[in-house]
Image 1 (cartoon, rainbow, N blue to C red):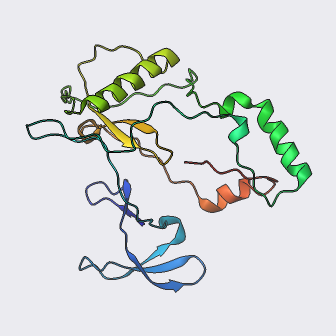
Image 2: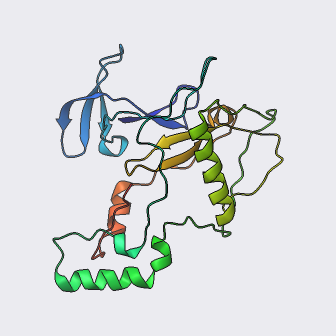
Image 3: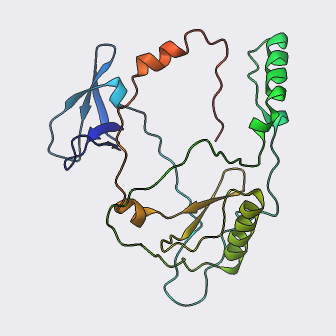
Amino acid sequence: MVLKALQAHKMEASWEGPFTVQERLGAVNYLIAFPTSNQKPKVYHINSLKPFYSRELKVCQFTAQGGDDAEWPEGVYYEGKCGGGVEEVNLSMTLGRMQRQQIQELCTSYAPTFSATPGLTEQAYHSIDTGNAHPIRVQPYRVSPQAKTAIEREIQDMLQMGVIRPSESAWASPVVLVPKQDGEIRFCMDYRKLNAVTRPDNYPMPRTDELLEKLGRAQFISLPWT
């Protein structure tokens, strides 16, 4: 994938691809070929590149063109959510016994961080700049009874956790359900029409070498599990 500047807004960039690495030029530069266009191969710095992973897209939300609802995909609906907590933190087997014990004690001292229940912060607020655009109201997608039950359950869970609240806004976007690898359901929103009228916040990309320098004194590095 290549981070390329947009034609309409040179100060904005987006990931495009996948493209082919034609040749490696030195330690940090690569010659990228664009087989699907008339553009000649171009040299890109490694900071503007990232690997592309092909995977099958499984979306359990759908729209129906009349008739009865389609059947809910087998194996997607779940009866209960999986647990979560410090006991499910996966530690590398390459660590020594003392190192594993130290990390377990550290994780236990920050047990709320590893909770499966989402949290809510009041330290920062985010506003979406839509300019002079009129409110966009998209009707909910038609779903099967099983999917509707899952949506209502997720809404009730989020209301009880306090991460959402009832709204009377003039803006509305439909729900999209996506299955996760563990068999649970990811509750998503289709904000494509909202994004089309949103003014993006532009900020410079961080330098990779500076980020690596900040990790220079780190003894342990953790990775998110998704």
